[in-house]
Length: 462
Image 1 (cartoon, one colour):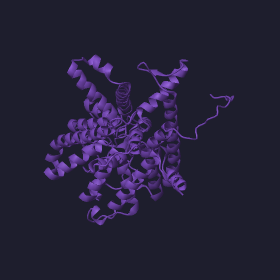
Image 2 (cartoon, helix red, strand yellow):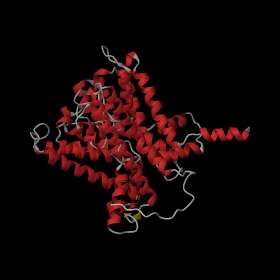
Image 3 (cartoon, helix red, strand yellow):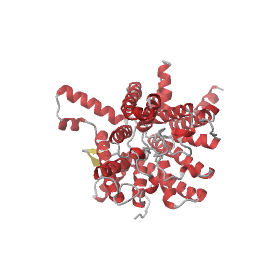
Image 4 (cartoon, helix red, strand yellow):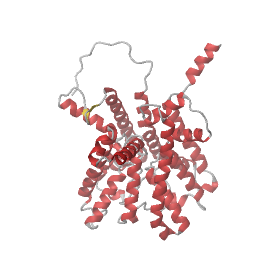
């Protein structure tokens, strides 16, 4: 009997991937239930199940695609629920669960620690609780500073109470790369030439997208450099290779995106053609940043040229960096695959970056993540075109935005039928869960790995 009971427990024990997938799903269902409460909706408005479910999904998945205006459809209570869901989505359900355990002074089992390690893709379980505390503390500090800075702009315009609420909501949404706001129906388009609003929003988005591991490495190295009097060159040498790659790729994508948007939109009368040079650069830079899973817009997305939309889809697919609030397949994942290709072309034995080799297991994982995401994305594009009867460019932009958890839209989200809403919800959920679960799946050792070495087959590729 004891043996049967142990076997049963072994069978029902869930993997890290299953816990994360179900955790997000339960959070979405709970959020939808709360949003269906009568006092979650503004007076004169009605919320059906599909609207509540879509809003809960886009909030937890920190996407930002909405079928109803956040600022007008929901009451303050409803907006509080949405903000809470965004914060949970930014942290992740595992972080929230772990923080509750810390507050209740519960002990973390080895299984709990391994779950956290898997979720954050960390190399060791050593110092996990301290890492979690830093994640939560530093997140609230950055969001708090962002809210204070926003308040200098929004309080004079909306009054103290509403101005503070807008500031807090925008700060949390920007840092979590959610792209939702309670300002008005035009996102940040009315502020496209407002330098403080642009700079604050860009800073929050980039900080959220860099990833906590990069944050902590920079902070610790900066403290050591200050203590020992290191110069900038020594500081840059002492940060680890992950930080170097993330910072390099972030800078590359931001600059290249700005130049491409500037080039393709230069003569577009519906976007930046009439703006002075400085504002053209600012708007193009903001668009480059928001393509990286942020979802805020200072330019009307429906007026962008097809070339800009295509570039945007590529950038939305790539997303931000690992272990942060951004979505997408992640910059380092793309870079690993690119580096492997370059290594093959140059006939090198293994990819090398910053005098460090890239393990074959990591290359396999990157290939699996990118391939699975591409398959899901293109299947959903076809499904949306069929169910919602949309042109290719609009459907492509919407789905890349959904699976990249970006939140940019060419104005079609609010007009989707039920089938179209379901397709986009699947995209948002897959985008938030897919890269994480695939990464965990391919990084976890399984008992069914091949124990037999087969002879090499004779295959032809290319």
